[in-house]
Image (cartoon, rainbow, N blue to C red; front, side, top):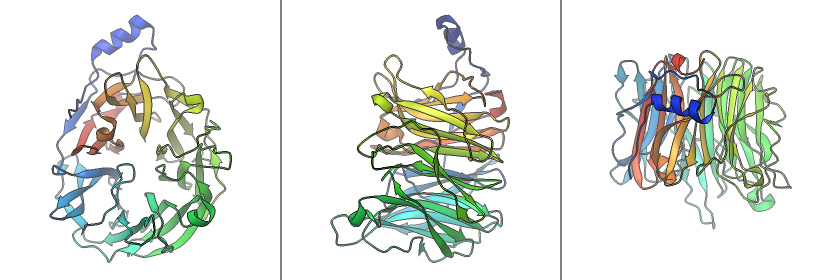
Length: 410
């Protein structure tokens, strides 16, 4: 399987004018460049997180003898740091859509969260989520603790984590402890401290979609969780809940798409925050018309503007989802998602202003959908870093950087 990493060619600007598309406000000097990374061949499930110093942590699962190792490295303007290992195990539960995560707190501690297969006896033994902390840059880690109180043979996965204090973070996850009795999943949260403790388990929503990835970010007003909801009518729209003063507020939809689907689409939302500004990106397919939508909030997720449709079926291409989003310094956003073209899938990237004006999507990489996986994006000072791959038949973690993000969206 091959990948192509493409810059923004000037011919796209001319084509946009010729066929009447809105002229994109993109500098032709801005381009993604694929960069090498420390993940070895065979690595899986990449994820990105931002450090308080403006660096980016790349984490992944890597073959280590008969086991897999959860490893990470930090990218700065000088390059990659030394690789650190969180833990080695033979029983990681590997999902491209729900990778492990490594986070750095403002007090200097590191936290990691990952899923392990449950060695139960039931028909679906499920998995458990664990966390550990490090105080020496990732060289040594605390004894892993389960982040949920439930010890049943059921699924606990699709976690997201963000700092909610200088010495703590909050993790959210999908929890199937009620599935056998009530046939529904919960969205839950727990507080993780830099000393390796787990406490304050809460239920955010008692009925959510069963296997769509979650998103969680911190704002100046507290944390914001985004997830795909569910009700008795099988409506599975994107919802948000805000964490204020330690209390989860009642959830509400980002937009009432009213997508009715009798099954989980495995397509969750993406969030990015900057102060009180928030951007939410998601996939929907109301009436069997797939679309990627983006909505902005100026009040930390309390309300959202009407969404902008970034992609829908056009010519031979249809959006697939697998979304990623990052807010830029000027209030605009950079969105990424997968779409299926005539012969292969593509990761496309599009800068979007805070209003409704949009630029032309650009193709970052192409290949099979299962190989491209789920793109992730994070700011790296004046650049944007993106990761993908590490899934399907091609076990290879890919990374690229878009330099000088101020030039791509005004």
